[in-house]
Length: 265
Image 1: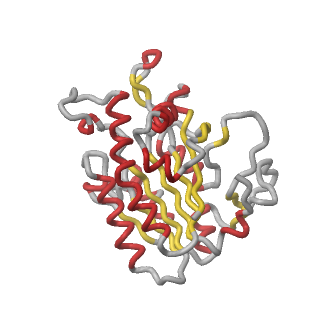
Image 2: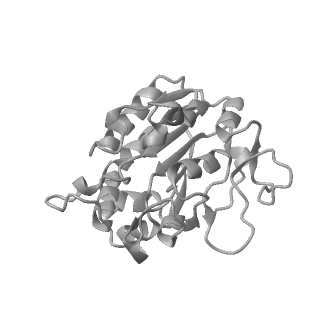
């Protein structure tokens, strides 16, 4: 999508919705089969296959907040949407919004944005120095047990936090909202009724269907304040026995290949 981000930043609310651990192949299959109708409606072009800059949550998000979002999975020079001032960058172009600061979060704040972090997985749990590091980049941070990986209704609770936080913001104040969606991350076996009490590729897909059922409310909340530019993507995938691998933090294609999409309203 051709888009001059210098015309977007400052005029649109911004959002980064990370479906933590979502695999590209599962996302694409579920959409093709019609089992994620709300995401299909929001992303008429379907998921784009991209390569993640990291193989687990912390590494990927450090890259994301430095402006290095998942890279299109095809050869070529791919201009980035956001960047920080960085000498020698080969992926900054005329449509890239170049921001000041050490992170894009700081850069957006410098452009007048209120920055909101709704945590999910452990690296955003505010429970220890590591769990506070990434959220501390934001002016407003939230995490509770019900937003985390063990609550089967975590995404609904995260949406409620977004609703409450944005409702308090002045209508003319632009917002950058980051949500680390925890539902896909292990454990996810509870999304398969009467299934085994272990995570599988099938329960991973079922967790995505749960997210799809509730994501229209999140899009509506983010879009009701005015123009919106949102990125929805995964930070990494996870293995369920492929080539003998389980989990992530490994450079296997099911881990490094992620879905990505952009929404402009």
